[in-house]
Amino acid sequence: MSNESETDVDEETADEEEQAEGLQKGDVVKLAYTARTVDGGQLVDTTDEEVAEDDGIDTEEQEFGPRTIVLGENHIFPDVEQDIYGKEVGDEGDVTVAAADAFGEYDEEEVRTVSKDKIPEDDRYPGAHVDIEGEHGHVETIIGGRARVDFNHPLAGEDVEYDYEILEEVTDREEKAQGIIQMMLDMELDVWFETDTVEEEQLVESEDDEDEDEESEPEYETVEVEKETLYIEATPQLTMNQQWMMGKQQIAQQLTQLLDIDRIIVQEEIGGGGMGMPGMMGGMGGAGGADIEDALEDADVDAEEIVEEIEGAEE
Image (cartoon, rainbow, N blue to C red; front, side, top):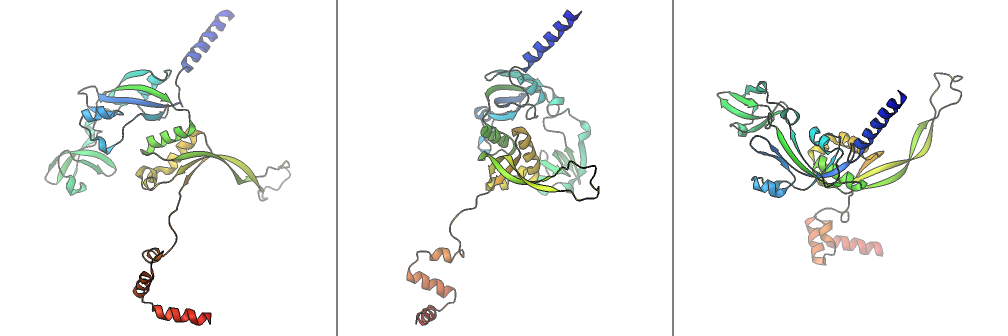
């Protein structure tokens, strides 16, 4: 009896070791992929610029290339993630994702009639994509003062075929950070890691807690601790990025967890020329005497009076 139990345990251990081989949850990989609807072959997404061009996509409006994803973080369809687990760099896959697990089943109740006044005048035509009270949809018809709007996802009810190739496992920390930021914000940013020593206030734990008055003030002490920090260089594009402005706290929290760091500092460098009055002091630097006199005249200052005052001060 005991021999059978030991055999079962050994088989379970072997199965676990086999399952743990290859790529697993938490690994960061670069994928090349193309996704199309099963019925009709409509292009859903691709990393291949040539594929996009062949389908009539305006490739100047977006960048193409391998995508960096973190396995287990729902950055791609769960069915595709499951297919990747256990595979190695260089492996390929072809997964059919059911509509319910892709963009959802088509729901007739999501086609609703709304007042035409809720739609901007420029979008009052069949096929227009509109946002109404926080929901995105497309206009089907407009009759009189009413509009029929379909709030289903445009690809609702469509099964999706997903072809992919695993190009690389990303292990460099800075490249990981850049790849995750690129995936979240669709922009490339300079990043670097540093271990900083900072001062923190920590609660002092007393050995005689039972003898102390419950109403006594807690005691704190200042200690130095090391913080593993990700620095991100701020750019005008970052400060104006809608996703960043609306969800920077959530994005920072995700980065902190995925990269196993203590904190994130977004660093802005403010540089440039010398200080001065724009349009006047800047224009006077290195200027000739005539330019200086013109500037003084524009400022309603008498140059001869200034010279007299200076000479009088020297005497």
